[in-house]
Length: 83
Image (cartoon, rainbow, N blue to C red; front, side, top):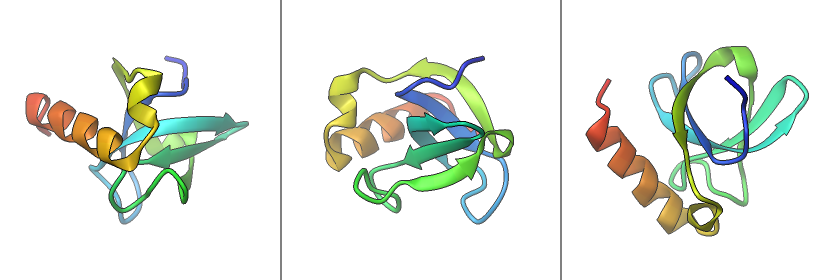
């Protein structure tokens, strides 16, 4: 599965293990991720591809414009797809 802008991923390693994050950009083997709460759009987290599990859900670009919209979309996904 390709890592594209807007794809939701679940962290498999680190302090954020189990959290759902959105891909903002792909830089080689690194991903820039944000969730709108702990990791904002202005300060995304850099994480290796192998440390996340991609989901089938890709968010629209409109939901990636603000932290509030992004965190709401992730909360809705987590409610529909619990761990």
